[in-house]
Image (cartoon, rainbow over all chains, first blue to last red; front, side, top):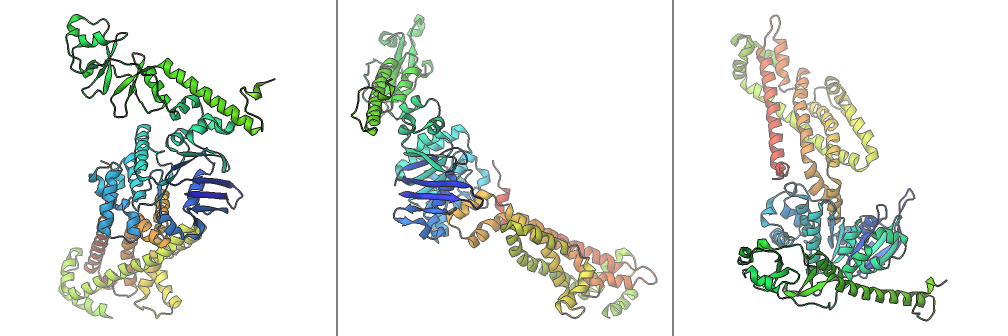
Length: 394
Length: 238
């Protein structure tokens, strides 16, 4: 747990970078600090490992005041990843990863063996071990940066815009692997970004900061999207937030329709017999959906052919049964047949759902959210919960 | 003076053609090798001492930016003192007798500091800011960071400065020979003394050749050392 207790940072020239900041980054969770440039997010992060000293206030690491721990000792217990990785250009990848263990006097052989494990853990080929950072791409360097931060197995990790300097495709990969790693490691993570989408994707909790280092809102991503606390947060969270909020709403038990899918290798004719509206779903031997087959207006000789992968339309996305309303809606909207494919968590076919069915569920959920909001507002004004939106009455 | 006695034997045995330097070298082998050895340590020792002085000076100039202009200007100015004047002025300044053997290394150390302080400061400033930040954040103390991260990364820049300082010292040492201190410069002195009434070139040509060979050897050694110590600089994306 990392707790900011009315932390302020004022520079000698009078600039206030961080102002009376209070929040708690829970153990084992990812807490994202997000905001426009000049909001003090990086300053706040650097105050945790004392790269910058606060002017006033305290930062607690579990039950220890960080101001009372020697900086070098404090830092060796906190992993740190920065933009463009900041690798040591004169050391091999392996020695870069082993930096902190070697610094704390660990046996060289042991430190390198551990570094080798981490190299693979962050998804790099062992052949990279002997290379120098200049021989790696930006994304690969960033992976090494993450491995280096993990080397001493610190309970706390600080990440400062770690994925900002790589292209969008690599960024998405790195983000996904970062989440996968965190699911295994359960570190207490504070993550700084200027990208609200990244914050919403990665954060268990998100702290939105405004210029001058004041906390605007500290909430879960879903809350941030559905109830931004003021116009600054609403503006920062941005457009499409209603749609993006669906990404945090569980789909629940959707009314699934049956489908009699055809198998790869079967005759096209067999698929046509089972098709609805000229579209047949095709699965493989393990019942995993492979794509849609258009069976309308096919000549006779085509009907006698086998169903092969290259005949299939792959336009539709798949939604997990335990997934979100956003996934389900996307599956329905992207499906060439108009029927969204829902799969079990093991990837096997569960059923299909139409866009209107998903929308009905969204409608239902939104009504529930509205009722809650009205109740909450009413409770705040000290009145009994009302069925109508009191604020709308003339 | 020994120069005159050795010169006497020269005249008896050699031609005065510039190309006769080889026979001059063989005839005065012992003396020439002594000059060569003196030249070697007189060129190198000041660079080593100069580097040891320049490291803290350069570090201060890099670390506290406001000290950079005064430190670099003052050390830079030292280089503008003409060498012959510096050789002459060192003994009274340092309380030595004229023609004290310490006079040359002291003067050349001053020149080496003049060249190397700037190089050390600029070399340290060439370390990427994020590398420095990452080192600090990993828990490096200042001294360990300097020795383990910053100096190795600055090494190529410092090595380039060492090349200039060493080669320049080889030529400056020779000037001290003309005021009578033992090193390859003495060969020029001897040649000039033997050039009356007719020019006598062999010792002068030998002096030039040995100085050039020495400078090339030192330069090559520094380049080689730098290559061995910085394999990472040749590592490029494949």
